[in-house]
Image 1 (tube, rainbow, N blue to C red):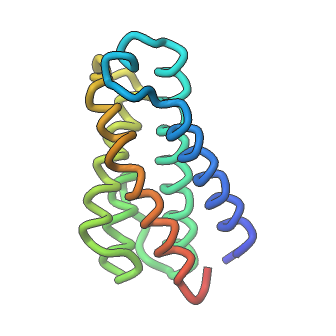
Image 2 (cartoon, helix red, strand yellow):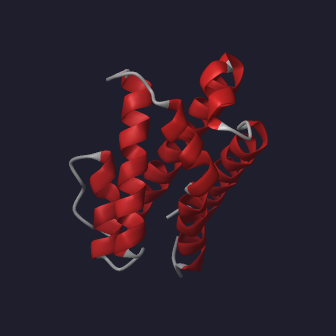
Length: 138
């Protein structure tokens, strides 16, 4: 496992979270009407999910854990290997659901929900990053 690669991805994850925190408006109505804020927030949330999935994939590969079928299952695999808490895996799988919606346009994005993610769920990514950094071999 290339520790430098993981640390670079973690730094990119931190950057995305910082951009979200700085650019997400104070109230959901403003986010729902501000196209620039929507672009910044959704792009950085999507990237945060992708960086987390990439990190998970590297951890899985380095430990010879069977490859998951989906992005969300990558977090289950880490939880099953006791690398992250099961509850964190469940929350990160929900983030993958948002990423799929945003990237593939499966439906209209509810900006009130996105605002809630920005205000209440960014710590899930921080908790993931902290868990990764506590692993002996990354």
